[in-house]
Length: 92
Image 1 (cartoon, rainbow, N blue to C red):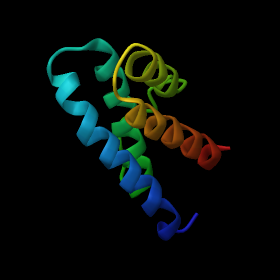
Image 2: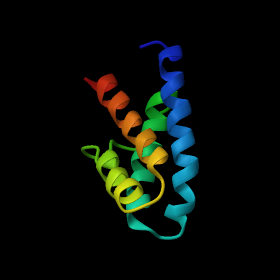
Image 3: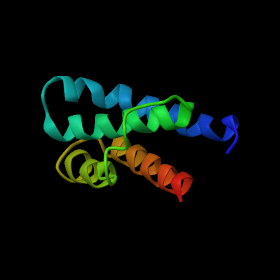
């Protein structure tokens, strides 16, 4: 994959991380899990060495449940799901 291919993923992951980090900083466990996974995605998309992969991705499921079904951030949940799908395609 060329660096240009990574740019849309990097932009999306940084945007989602920017939105989820304030929730994670408040100690909300679902946001902390999503933020950890998004940081890994940012490292992957930027080609930078990062932490070990945080296990199987669950950020899309968490986001749908916590931000869409029981929350008021369906657009953020959708963005996180798109990121997860793109990363899984990249890793396949």
